[in-house]
Length: 319
Image (cartoon, rainbow, N blue to C red; front, top):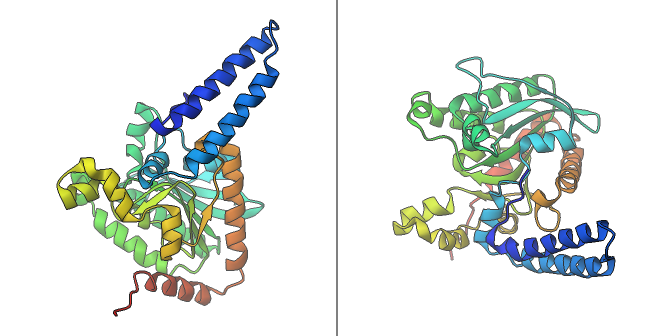
């Protein structure tokens, strides 16, 4: 994977390149730069901490879309075992923008469903840039119903700019497929944990996010609309996306405060794309901890609590 850096990451990247150069010179045996390397590494850690503790909302949006960020299949390979992918909606076709199947986490069987993006051009086209068609959501629902039938907990990974808005998707019932998922997930009698691992965009994200526990990776975003779309509607100017991002309250910290999500999964310093293993370990622990409490509830308690959880969102008091 070729490292790619956002503008605000470039000062860090320059120091990291310097470290690599010094290591190569040290390895050649001509001069020992070990002490110098240690000094530069301290500078990198300090700069990373300063940079990532003061991100703007827009910088968080860019980070949530980072091309090197771990995707659903990356977390599946690192945090789960024995994954068996299941395909198709039994109606139209398989949608590669949503992957799903049976897996194990610490010996516990789970049904894992997630949106999957691509990194190179071929993968992006195959995965439709992580934007599912209605058959993707119908596949997800089929797998969730299967999980309910066998009392298997469900894990969903949210990472999409939104459901695909193309003509074919609309003709095949995109809105109906999303609405049906919302309705059915609300009453599934098995524990559900959702994690926003990158972008959580619009109804395309919510269609697999009606869960008992909704978590977000530290630098993920979750919103009813993209900042660019919001800016285009409010100001007829998509270039004001940075301003829209500030107003939308789309970061993990914002959404915990608003009661939209239940917790934040810590990322490695510099973001999940810098250390897949650490990010996956943190995510795995969060999932196991979440299921620990949910497994004690009866099916009726689960659905009642899930209903109450979403009904409370958006409440307000008139003065």
